[in-house]
Image (cartoon, rainbow, N blue to C red; front, side):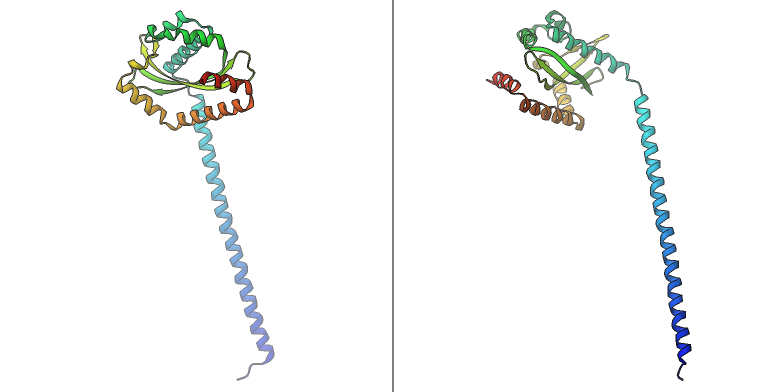
Length: 220
């Protein structure tokens, strides 16, 4: 049976309207799905940011441990005496006073070093509960040279009574101390500090010919 032309048109229009309706429904569902995913993502990001903020605030408000505070005070005093060339004072802070034959080094340091700027410390645990490893980062201001030289030193500190002693003679390091020192150097934080210091030192040498000449002379 042959369909009338008008009937065919009605059927075609019906199909077109049906597909348009399906397409609009699809778009609506897709939009709702996208909005849901976006809202979930925003909620997740806001939650994570809020949690991070709370964690950071808790860490910032956490007081420095009394032991660490005393240790940092000891190290600041050590550098104060080092700057002043106070050989007698330094002997009272080190494990082997006789090894301050480096007294010559102390005097030489005092002769050339004007000050230690931007002094900061990072601590790691030593071989036991009574010992610590301290990494001191600083910029050394050398007399007559404008640009400070970034530097870093490692120290092994042992608690003695209410104070500390700095092990200045490596011959007195025990196997446990050496293991602790090697473990400290392997931590990501210390490796990062060493890299930052080395990069800053090389940059300083490139920026100041007098500084480079000073260190080149020290190598010879």
